[in-house]
Length: 105
Image (tube, rainbow, N blue to C red; front, top):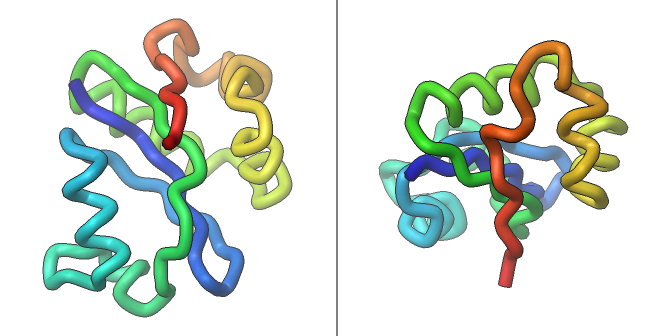
């Protein structure tokens, strides 16, 4: 399984990425580990906001790409509040049924 995630940074920006292990990846971002993303190295990660599970890396990467390139900040904020909006915002670009929203603890 692969996961596409959105996390909030201290400056209120939203970072979107993919991983095969959410817990490990969040530890890298939050601790600014040498493996954290360039973006989170300069924008302190604050909170994991949304996670979607997909069958493989290709699907996870596709969702990451379309969230990053097609959604405005306001749409990303709406998607964080209501994960079911994935179909509304990206239905023409992706097959939303390929992604399962995961509850964040």
